Length: 416
Image 1 (cartoon, rainbow, N blue to C red):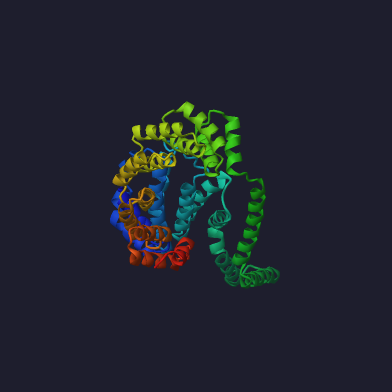
Image 2: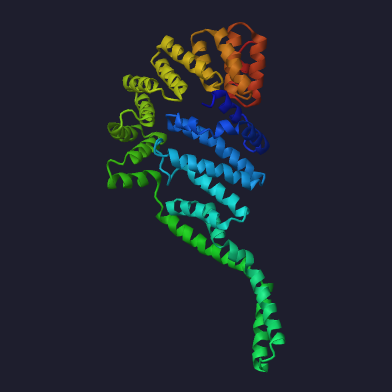
């Protein structure tokens, strides 16, 4: 199993720091692609997090133009998602990392001059009906790559061929020779006009028109899954997907209806329980929230630290601080590098006037996130409460550099 520290190490790499991502991949490729790790996961969220790391490493290789390595990575990634999509209730037609892995692989294959293979990858995306403009544009180039690449060469070769034929074969009449010469001249003029480039522009216009026409017919995610559920009310994946989409759109009551329907089919589905717990919490149905979080822990949810944290946060909402602290402690024991969990425990300590404990956690948060202005301000307030005005002032000044209003206000109102 990939450790939490491993995931956080990757997260700290800059978005466009491709060389560091490549170093990371080369160092950890055996772990990243270990099939047993993917088989042992139990949640969609954890699966997607692992996929994300491999996907980003593949992009890094594409960016430095190592297309052979990039293609190899994306092919493995596509295979992983195809093999596991049912387990994690993923709809391949709408799955971001699946379609974008196909797209990135197609670009790599195109630059490797494997046009047919590139076209095959892009055709899968086209057939979903949800291809974006870049994907549609690349499909056009891959489909007509050989024609666009060699059209100019074919024309100029044919022009020269028509010039030399009459000279080699003496049986042609003067009239026939004139016709050959005229055709050859037309071909030369055509060559000078760069027909390959002009054809490319024409095809692009055709594909843009086709893309815009398809775009007008395109439906949103909710409508897409609604139509699938109307055709088959027992479509388990669509119920989960629509429930999650409602959840992400903060439509928790609608999400709850879909997730309940899905969980009737499979009461132990990890993703259904996870998102239903969120619904219950947002709808202030806390008893049921606890039931689902406890069920996830009992089912050995692979991302269990998050569940302890979320349950702890629910306890904190209910002002059951001892229980909240117990769950936060467990979450941090499992994921000691998670700055979000550390921040929330620090805040809980601070609200209970346990400022020494709060400062220790804020120290860790700031170590991981030096520009976290909120953590700097909160730590400053904890120092101030303990009478350490010099340290408090330093934290407020640092947070002020990031424009954090609470820090600015503290500098104005507190006695230094």
